[in-house]
Image: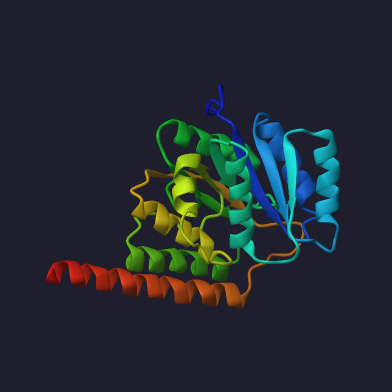
Length: 251
């Protein structure tokens, strides 16, 4: 049974883009069809391929689509932070994130909406809980993602199976608390950082099983630098957590 989205609170989905002119049209069309009441904010980092200009054309004829232009390519984390700040300023009560390339199926957004409706402060579309699936990934990438999440669980104790997931929905009240602090994470480590901070605020976190599809259009933004950043930061956060636990025992 499809989760109900009746009486949906004002909801904004933030989609960061950089050279996603091929992928974004299909993703946006599917999202608008799946949950027509949801608003969408495309945060474009001055894409050379015209993604931002195309999004402007859509926004001109669809009052549920908005565009935020940034001066240049500044990274995934800053794009989401800019989008969340815009959404909070405009009074949205639920704010989410998803990829531009339809790796996250827009048709599964109602599952996240339902989790928040039932009391979650943060709903995560998870690949690694029962019922979650990944399609068309090579074994090497599957192993990397599973190993990364196991490492995060071991060091940070978040109790989350998919802390690196980028398909999420936050209550505005939680985001306001999270954005009050300085968040410097770039790349995909941003997702781990936001999960860690949400847990520190005693947020109710729910993982909803989703299907994750390998992109068929455009080019992945994953790079060795992004992986290295995540490894270093998670290790530092884990060491800090361990030190704090030792100090509490000694105190």
